[in-house]
Length: 290
Image (cartoon, rainbow, N blue to C red; front, side, top):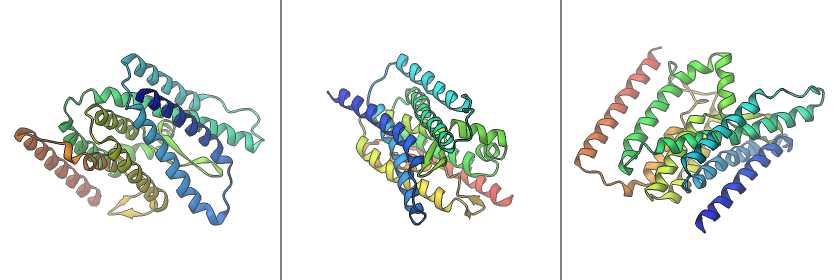
């Protein structure tokens, strides 16, 4: 009965996500309400994928099903990116509908393929206590590759081809009244979010506490990017914040009482934390030096 309920919720969330992605660009917002509209749409389109991945990972999927989701998701993203535009480009509404349709298929496709890969990666975590070092390492790596000037994300976004590839693969956050997305969420963020959810469900951790810690954290994080992305902090622009930081912190804080580390695990975790601090310190030092 629980699996049937979860499956019904998954189908409903997928339909709601697809339909609202199609409709939102056609809903105009008066100029005085533009900020409120952006706040509302960003919160809606960040929360839906999180809930969708949460309930999807509450079920036990076979490897064959995951491969199907992976392939289907990739096909959706490729189809949304490569399918030719209609020849009737004179109709603004048709163009907007075409972009909205691509965004809807691309969004669901990205959630499918990254979510499936996340479940496969979760199989590598054999003990719930490993979540602590894994969370610290992932957050550290995400900060380095996303925020540092020499990071791979910064390097990719500097080139037109790299930016185009990133935007094609990323999950797009729609906005009221316009066809272009308000923001992009990297597929790696959804992939590791899926991995964390899978581990939380498998080891029967505080699943609901994790969910309700993650949603507001990610929404607030996106608001910082949307409204203060043009600012620079310590030489680092706020328009490309690493989402794995709030994801990792939310996972750890929501489940802190479930981790019982033995002596060796404490030593290993302490060593990992020290390594992450050193890596971040060096990264910020090089960033400021440049």
